[in-house]
Amino acid sequence: MYILGIESSCDECAASVVQDGSTIRSNVIATQIELHKPWQGVVPEIASRLHTRWIWSVVEQALSEAGINKDELDGIAVTNRPGLVGSLLVGLSFAKGLAWSLGVPFIGVDHIRAHLYAPHLENDIPYPYLGLLVSGGHTVISIVRSFDDIEVLGTTIDDACGEAFDKVAKYYDLGYPGGIAIDKLSSQGDPKAFRFPSPNLHKGDHVFDVSYSGLKTAVINQLDQFLNPGFDKTKENIAASFQKRAIDILIKKVKRAVEFTGIRTVVAGGGVTANSYMRTSLTNLHEVTTYYPSMELCTDNAAMIAGIGYQYLKVGETSDFSENAKARVPSFKRGYP
Ligand code: ATP
Ligand code: MG
Ligand code: FE
Image (cartoon, rainbow, N blue to C red; front, side, top):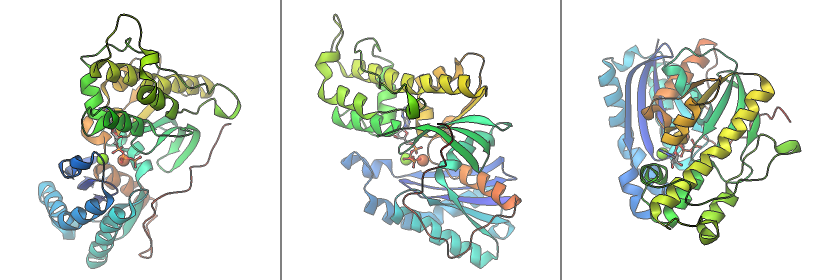
């Protein structure tokens, strides 16, 4: 079965053909990074206008690279939540129109579940596992029982992890996009230069939660007081020390979740999973099998949309053409605590 996936929730205009939920036949990503760079962040109005201009050629390229004709498609999956509503509407409307004209089902997909599906495109991963989603807008530690069943153990109580990378990079003018810039600078810095604080979330309802606003404030507003003697206040040292702390905060909670649940498989997804220190830390988890996507599948892409779309289609779950775009989704059901 061939599923066309379409992703336009933010600044990536992407289309992909995936066969039987796991074989990537094409994965086209037209990024708008350069066009938002002057603002050091995504400008929603510009993003949706560019999606409108690009989407047809991106889809055509995905079909041609896959070597198939649009009449051979068995379904069309598209991100319809969460994201920038104007951007989402472009992909959603396009997908509905194409599905209608071809007479095939269309499936509206949750972008966050799709990020966690991405590693399944490259590996056979048995359920259940601990799911770690770390992206620009979300930070979630969960028990994943199926592609659709995610029980949240912990989440951020304020900023998302990727958002903290982006804000620190923007403040110190480290480069855009912020996460990649910090990752690069870190390789020339010393993570011991600054001793940034760790959030104090050890008790009760918060044992698996994380927080990034305190770390962000420390890095941006109170830099001097965290500098260790003998180190310099360089961009590289700021980046390396921030990066280590930001990732360690998460890894500590992942270890706690492994201990608590006894589940020894950790599957990570989302843009921050592209971070080199994050990848090393996950790989080094003791007596735990870890999976994370290859670089191209960490950040926004349409292969993950087509992949999870196939799983819904397989169990007969398709969307009605009245399905709308949603900027936000209700939070996932919270398990423990
Ligand atoms: P969401 O998926 O929550 O809706 P999003 O789609 O904007 O948000 P992603 O595309 O998954 O998020 O990832 C983008 C985020 O990943 C940004 O915050 C970016 O800084 C971060 N990121 C990308 N590469 C790296 C890296 N190498 N190190 C750290 N962060 C990174
Ligand atoms: Mg992006
Ligand atoms: Fe994303």
